[in-house]
Amino acid sequence: MIAARRFFVEGAKEIGGIVEIGGTDAHKVANVLRLNVGDRVVVIDSTARTFTAAIAAVGRVVRATIEEEIFDDRAPSTAPRIDVAQAVPKGRRMDFVIEKGSELGVETFLPFYCERSISRDVGSEKAARWRRIARSAAQQCGRKSVPAVLDPMPYETLVERFGEYDAVLFAWELAAPAPLHRRLAEALPAAGRALVVVGPEGGFTHAEAELAQCRGAAMLWLGPRVLRTDTAALVLLAVIGAVAS
Image 1: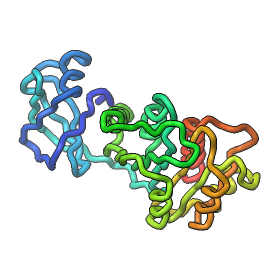
Image 2 (image 1 turned 180 degrees about the vertical axis):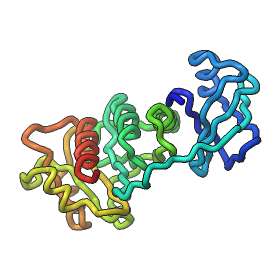
Image 3 (image 1 turned 30 degrees about the horizontal axis):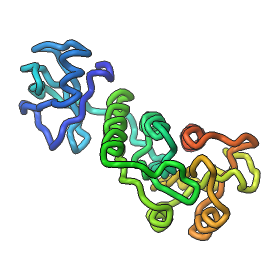
């Protein structure tokens, strides 16, 4: 079944149960996909179980009856799980990072501010939009889970979390030049968790980079051209995907 008909639902579900799809997802069912009673959708519950469900009622809330479970016969991935710490960029560039990062498999986004950050005005409405974007992107690309998007944090708080990871990959234009694929092969763990860290429009200060290095981060040079902050994370994720596959 096409990815456009995949929806995440809260709670653990069982065959024969009724699921409710509300909010923008209900609007999508009724007005975008124009599905009717008897049409089928795919639902993924909070335990990542996937089911087909037949629509029983369409309205502000769409109700559907769970029919059968869909099993994934692919071998589980042994590649490391990747989180992204992104310095919050100006405008809506964070939307792009979250949408494309979700498609590339990011598990958690950790927005942060540092000395040269331009944008610091992130209220609850913008953070909620980022979470909606992550959810929509996960549904569109066929993921079985929605990436988490944390509330923005100071750089010092982010650095304190480095110890939670098996590797921290720190993008810095002043890092020692070395082929990216080679550095990633050296720094990436065979499994576990890795954190990709990308700085703001003006780059990290020397003090911030030194602090990260003292906390065990691997400093990565992304090439001779200085990439935009919203490009850098996606470049790293794409190369990681190639190296770790």
